[in-house]
Amino acid sequence: MNTQQLQNDKLSIINWMSQLEDFSLVEKVKAIMSSPDACLLSNEQKNAIDEALQSIETKGTTPHNTVMEETRKRFPHLYNR
Image 1 (cartoon, one colour):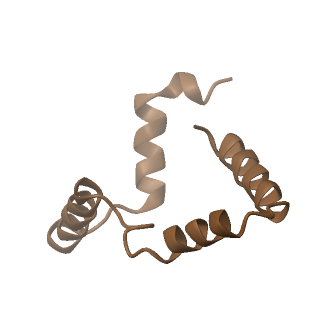
Image 2: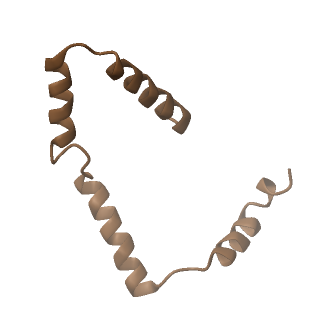
């Protein structure tokens, strides 16, 4: 799902919610929102973040301009349009 579709879906849900008259459904949505698992990262995501932070601590980071320079060298066809 791309960013624009996500935004459209969220707006559609907001519109739908604003027109609801079913109290039990609103209560169910509120329960989902207050659930501690509602917005948690998966273990895979947590592990990836931990690995990235560990890599930063041990190896440091690369300056943006260096990355861009290497990218231009590796993929010149993307910059000559």
